[in-house]
Image 1 (cartoon, rainbow, N blue to C red):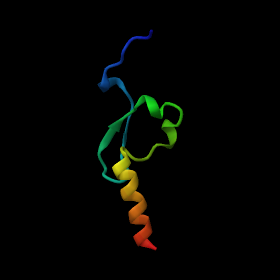
Image 2 (tube, helix red, strand yellow):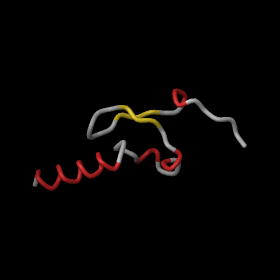
Image 3 (cartoon, rainbow, N blue to C red):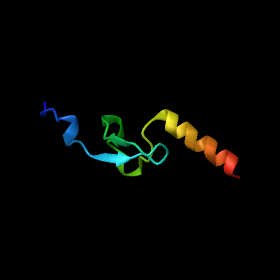
Image 4 (cartoon, rainbow, N blue to C red):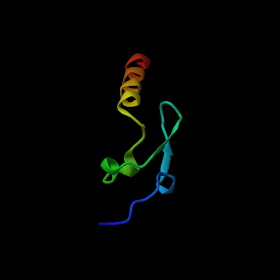
Length: 54
């Protein structure tokens, strides 16, 4: 098994909804380039905001 990485060594991004930094997660390994939001809550908030903008 590979060596464990420290959380500080993982790549990070800024959430498009809450503007907070979030770190890479294993479940995002395949599509890290397309990940824009940090959580399910932010994903839902983004959808709700789009619904009311129109």
